[in-house]
Length: 598
Image 1: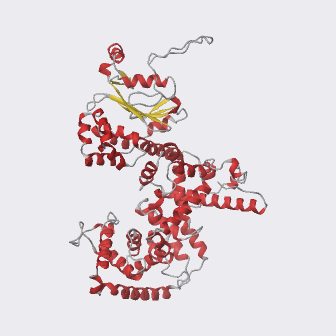
Image 2: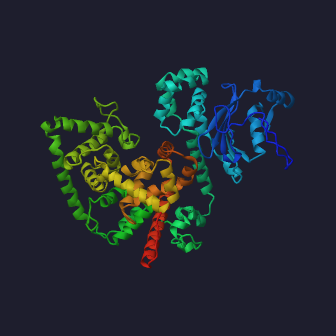
Image 3: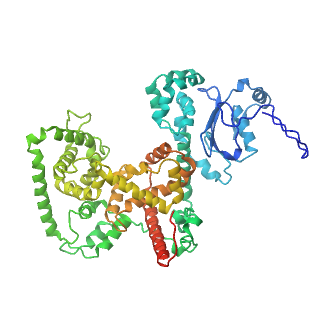
């Protein structure tokens, strides 16, 4: 569209357009300021795709496109090909297509940066480090551009505010069928096969989610270059202005000062070694040092794997901290006898095992155990046949089943609930004693049982506490979650239910649990671990993720990618910040000042 612009300031004639510019995004056209564009997803022509296209991602709202470039129908593009030939990228000659001209013209108006793969272009990010940008790998995105799937998914990217199932249903409804002819022929065939469409949609990472992951990776790379003495200025209150001045009323001026003394740091160190552990006890096996010192060392570094079994029996309450070696041997015997008595209540009770209630519970236990940690060495083998299960079993898996069945008769009020197998598995893998692992599990469940109440009251209380904590510590992120219908914090549910069991690697999870068991700073430190994860990703989530589905998928996809040490460092600092804020609020209250919290 050519717009007539009269350079004479006194000319009162109305500006005219040869083509009326669209006021909103339409299927084939759009009108938007260039400073609202965040990035471009570019697919050049290839052997499998005759025409290239561009998808425009905006800072707010849905993406636009794809816009296809029919080069063989464009006189200007054909003229460029005939007169200028191909384009050169380094020493390599490539085919010129219409998207090149579009990007060149856009680059005259606003900075445009490209990655090594040429799939992603950032628009208007003038301060982006070229070195960091060039190093970013685009493999996850390339996978989503495979063949026919991308054609339909680009259309569906404009309805990412709906759930994936809603997107599938959208293609099946009569009102939307007139849109199907707009798709390529092979995509039209897919639209009539719900299962195919559903699988395609389920595999799809929306453009926003991909960009969020990409930006998070870039930020993680960048953080490695920050000097250690400056790194933790970017945590919590020092990393972003979450407290608005008209709300905080100057309460936290000292927290935002440039005085390094006021900025807390973490105490992370190396694991407690076997020699260090044994030095805590005298010749009779009684604790020599103050218990808080022991807990501090475990909290700060975790435990060497060689002492983990004994230490975990202390941390889960099987052993009393003031016991000696002989007393602990007696505890082993008593606990073993008590466990066998409990086990006999169901193991040798045929009438109980024949009841429908018991068989239902036993089936749940068997099914869950066979799906728990099967990649861990101790649970990997399948040397025992299990006729009613799809996968084989082994001695250790059968022991897990026995422990959970025994807990079912030990705690008749709660019984077995899905998720408990996730909590038991690491305990048994470390302790490798059926009776002691059972009592360690009982101790662990004393603090975790409210998570498994059938009325969900325990989890509701935890999510409510998480809500209040984030509202107090990061009002800006909290408001973003409210705007995106994520205020229920459901994306934290799995984290809190089984203490991040499915978020960290097996090795890291063992360290995390022993850190949390110490209750060194607070028995709610797991909430600060959750806050730490959100704090690491808060900028990315606020910029890229605009609805609940995207936030839920993004947080779920963090599984097995989270750096434990960085998370614990940040969690500890956030706790100290929380403590300072609470002290500042209390000080203001005692002085008679009025404090409004966000």
